[in-house]
Image (cartoon, rainbow, N blue to C red; front, side, top):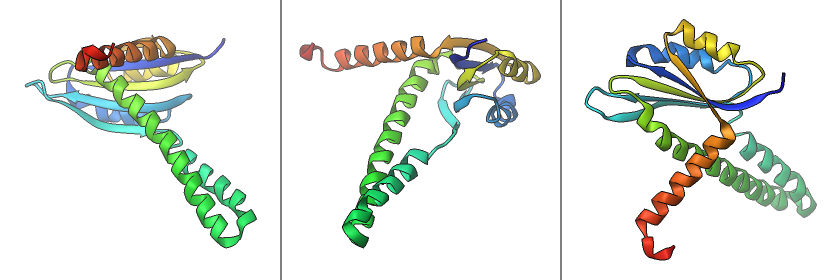
Length: 169
């Protein structure tokens, strides 16, 4: 069976039950990113927690690579190379975080009043682990193809940009 790159949504009608499921979800095979959104009974939405597997790896890895390249310039070159590499890696991570935030905005309408939504970006060889997690914690599960979801987010961003300044179209 081939892997499916999905955005998996676990919806909790009652906000009290999401935390154990979120903690457990961090150990799902193929998980890349997880976020928990909660909406109060009066409609206030809050991002309660996030998890990114490998967070910081790009920043540190780029910094180390830059430092190695900087060896050619001596001790000052190492310092400058590490700083430049870390800055580039951090910029890449910030871009990914910004894209994830836009995705959460698009999904925010799916969070029920008084409930919670856990959003998982996962490469699934089988739907079993996420489905079992949802069943154990009385959540409903929905899957969206990650590529299709990315297109939905881009379309929403374009629509928002055009609404902000319609004369630039």
